[in-house]
Image 1 (cartoon, rainbow, N blue to C red):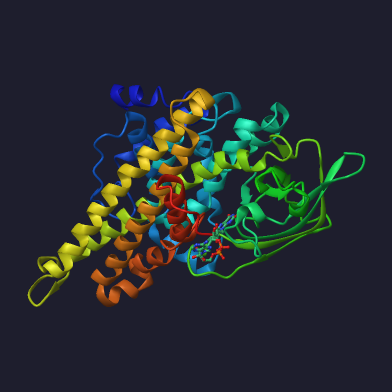
Image 2 (image 1 turned 180 degrees about the vertical axis):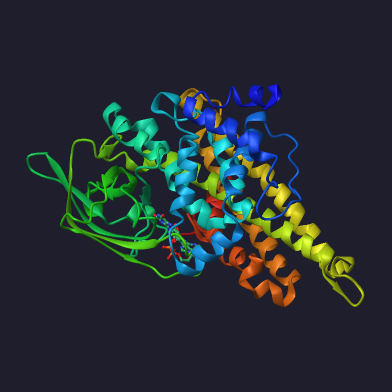
Length: 450
Ligand SMILES: Cc1cc2nc3c(=O)[nH]c(=O)nc-3n(C[C@H](O)[C@H](O)[C@H](O)COP(=O)(O)OP(=O)(O)OC[C@H]3O[C@@H](n4cnc5c(N)ncnc54)[C@H](O)[C@@H]3O)c2cc1C
């Protein structure tokens, strides 16, 4: 362990457990290739901070223990990557962007994005990212707006991996029109509990989660006064997901990719949660509170898309160098080389947008309302980054499959898995079309189209 490496991680990990693990990981990094996917690092790392590069090296060492065959099998068998979640939790990575006083590492979303990119880039793909990412972004509003008791009860259990969490926003009858969410949480007459009734859909990891960050209406939509924005009646809750109690059911959705992680319909029918400790932030303030998590989520998703794109492109370039047809490597044909070069430049441009958005998010978070970085500017940057990274990843993944010819369709070459998974950042947590609507209206001042 060189002095230089010790110095590098010092400012990073004050948490003793995390620090010790990171030292061990850094010591072993050199024994593994950078990633389980490709030994050649194609992303240019100029301009990243020491902290980000240390995170990249240390997390890739954890990921190297989970080869592509692990992810192929879990995808095909639709089994949760429990060991992967546990390995990251054991080394303290789930608390990367949580405050040190709560047991986290006190780093920012800029480092968390690097962690998520490293995970997808290792070959774990979106399945690896989705197994853990809600624990990183959904805890952001909790850490900022939760009470001392809520934080004491929840955060250490999430960081240690004892509890997992999921994010419950999307509803079947509302779609992207989040302000019209219908799930209702009504307070009992004696004020002791809330009764939740409604339906959520596409909730990732609900089968394995102990907690859900739930966005629900405390004032039904028709009752929200006309002059107020409809966001007024929404509240954010941190609730137990306990199927042994009445009023809670869930059903797994069969899906195209990322099959190792479950996605679910969740049904609430008068499900009761104690009023004390459930509400995060004020009643009716849920939309403002959850925005904090949503911008973080867009930054993380952008990083995840980048990792997927670089993994696929690295594979495609390696195949194009090795595969000989008509007596020469297929990469000697410009019809193969140019689309890959174009995909690389698109990823590099999206990378700049992604880490710029993450930096803005961190600056705004640190200084809050006093920050020179406005919340709406963070929203524009985070949405733009998610859009650009998802498109760049799609281009890279599609071209990787085509470069492999018939073998691009074979499970053992992984690129088909990544192509299936790279559609997720295009759809979620907000679609391409809605990002363009948002930029058109908020940045360009165009009339609202919906
Ligand atoms: C794998 C996966 C995991 C997910 N995980 C979670 C999770 O953990 N928690 C959670 O809460 N949600 C989750 N989601 C849900 C995801 O966030 C939503 O699917 C996404 O926001 C799109 O919403 P929708 O499916 O209701 O689409 P819809 O709102 O039905 O939209 C359908 C299509 O119409 C377009 N459209 C709609 N309105 C307009 C308009 N005004 N202008 C232009 N185009 C429009 C959309 O862009 C989209 O292409 C997940 C989804 C997937 C696929």
